Length: 295
Image (cartoon, rainbow, N blue to C red; front, top):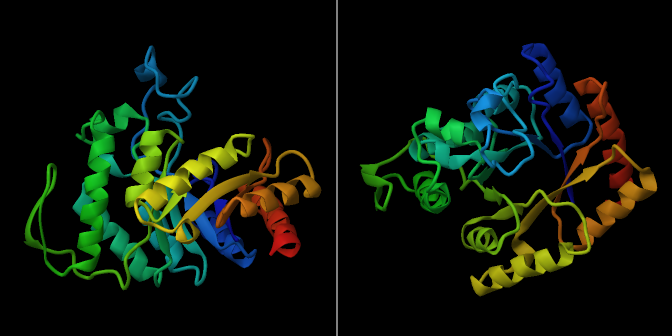
């Protein structure tokens, strides 16, 4: 099992030295991957009045800071040597596909292949509006986008005629040294599970352990098998909160996730009042304990 930590986008601030120290400390503390969330635009809370965005209130607004993920990872790539960089998630349908292919290829090249791209369709209609993309067909478009990305990453010249993409003998040289893994985030609906099984290299479902977890993962395995894919080769990234309970609870949670097929486990240990580095140091302690306990 690989262990990850989430970059504190809103808490870290804008000091390049603090960002450098966080990335290097995460790598030095044994974490295998660093996750970053993606938002380009934030909106005033009034924009969401009377609109169901899937949350009781918008989790982010115009006051929350988000470093642009490709720029952030390019910066940290030059300051680290081992840790993998992961978007979880990049809101793919609000971005131009060819530009994403170019940016992702550059991060992969400049990091020596240490980039894994998690994508999803997003919830913030104001971002799509501001970026001049259609919020309402984003689920259908993301499937074609993933197909196009993989062609642009592997073919010198691409010709493609789809519903939303039209390429005539174009390419993004330089190509990445290997195809970039594309994982998908989102919920656990049947429609989402079918999409993940068809298009993704792994899944970032964002779910917590519950009595229904095994059933949900069983549905995913069945969907993978229906697509002729082996669930044993499919990635599953989940999380563990060390903000409550103790070492025995955390170890039991990690063991349970591993028994369910999790390949990647993110550790969250920060509590209100902790600085980003304090939270990271606590997370390193938890990761070290888990690595010794379960390997």
